[in-house]
Length: 76
Length: 249
Image 1 (cartoon, one colour):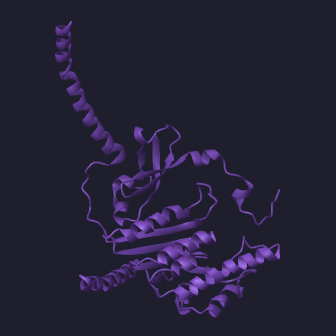
Image 2 (cartoon, rainbow over the protein chains, first blue to last red):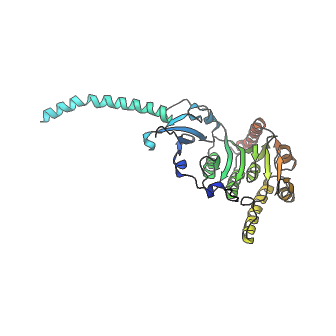
Image 3 (cartoon, helix red, strand yellow):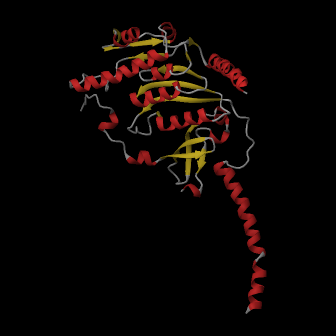
């Protein structure tokens, strides 16, 4: 089937809620981190994106995208 | 009874102390590993902060997580914080966006335009559609030589507008975009509308795709350049901003 429409894809094919459940936004000093939960474990996350206006934060090894990031218990 | 209690206490007291010491140590270790919140040597603070506006500008509808988006609820507090923080002297806004929600885009553009601190925008790759008002919102704008900006009318996604009311509403919305761009750049309303409505530039669509130098020639963008000239200009603007403060003191 070919569907011709002016609607955007996500308004016709709703995105699975699990897609949203796997990403999380956490606060870190000076900005926020966008994290993606790893499939194997519940507490292991991988950094997708750092949101900060401070350019030096992007040089910080701890916040490099792709790094593993473990959420502390206090955040749960 | 009393005695035995006392004894118990005295026997127990050393243990909790040890445990506490252990717990505190582990706590710090946990923090270092997980949160990085202990005293890690900080680099000196940058006097220039930057905002990246990438992907699609997200409006009231949340886009799926696989989309690259710029959310206004992230950017607006960042701009407020930058305006408020005395240590931040200038803002660099880097754009590589396909456009998106008109009202969210205009909100960001108005925020940037009304900042009292020097702002410089740099368009890399693309600053299309609603990215145009954001690009012109700053005091001084740069565009990379290979970057492009698509100027086209406001629409849903390109099909014919169904009813006259919708058309009028979109037309009004478009006026807001046109007014903002002409107010914040040197292009005239006529010239901008001509770019917006011209035929033959985009396949089967109206609008114009302006590349790097063209954007400067049309008066939308101030200068062709990259990150080096952008930071240099921002530092110049910061220096110009400074003497006034000294006079006040």
